[in-house]
Length: 118
Image (cartoon, rainbow, N blue to C red; front, side, top):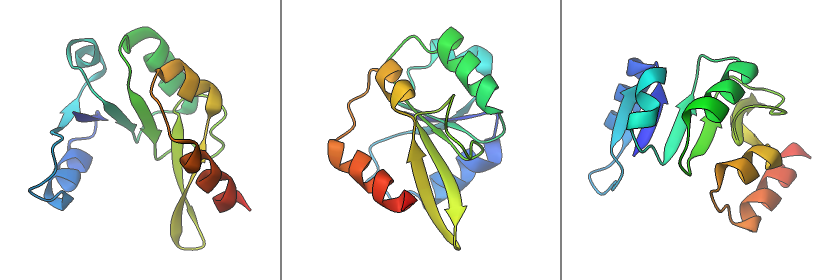
């Protein structure tokens, strides 16, 4: 399941953009619902990096990939941080958060993130 945190419009947008072959369900959840919902992916869009880190440390007790659209430096919080670079979407990876997430990320993705920074 892909979960957006406290952002129903983003959840609706992702649902509309996904094709019928998408095997993941997309759902908006509140912070209090995270423990009860086995999210494979959690998308943060309105939290600060410190809030992301707190939520991940205190509410996520299962392996889950965390993605942020509001964490430019990607030093704390989410494992993958999306940002705009020259009118394109790029990303950074927080290796410490990846390790804490207990989710395997192919090393080629790590290389791709490094290339996007150059």
